[in-house]
Length: 317
Image 1: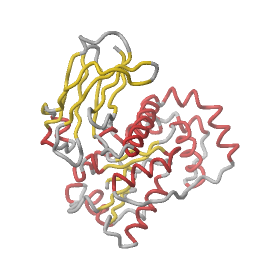
Image 2: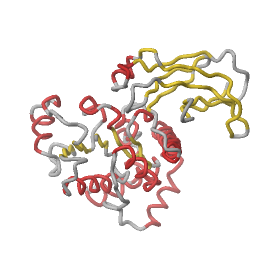
Image 3: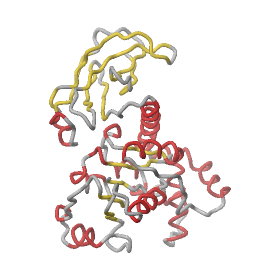
């Protein structure tokens, strides 16, 4: 598993839960690698040697990515080629709450004395989550948790990675709730203006969690997918992570928030996609689709997989 530990998103609690699995000699994960920076004591020796001394990540040979747990504060692109996107796990958090928490943590542990507004207006503090995930499609990742819904997130993570983790709290901020809430109330609007990418990412992650919880409840395998709507065309890619079976899609009308009649079916995800191939898609990358919307009347629609009915995209025509 490649765990992209975005700061102040409950990542420490999750990491420690996984490390307990390793310590228990479970067969699920047998090795841990950590990358929290060259000078961090928790960074493992193999990472220090390859990533920071040799400056050649390719020397860090992950022979068994399926049972090696890699964690740390890094961009997903640093280690993604070792693992493939289907083994990626991360947590995202409401951007305003996250930056407040990071500020209070920095004041408490790193001697930061500047005021909060000066802190969050630094370019490096803006859209931190989006930058660390480098624009990679959330729907193709193995699991994307939401901090505010930690227990729901664990259900999806446990199912995807064959784990039995329980909720725990580590590295929580002991600062009074009143101070934390005051900073949120005073600065929310300004922070949201500066973190539009993170806000969009957070909304996508929340929607994805809802969809995967539904698939889990329906006992359906989670679909890996990405879909974009252009003015007259919808395109993307979709595949079953554990199967070479072709994904078949359909479009249904949505009326008053409920799926109504099917208006287009038999959309096959069978075209070659360079992007999907690079992400490690099944079927050697022949998982792409593209179709026009010219035959659709004005209205609300959804694009979904035909058998499990998992929704890839809600859109208007």
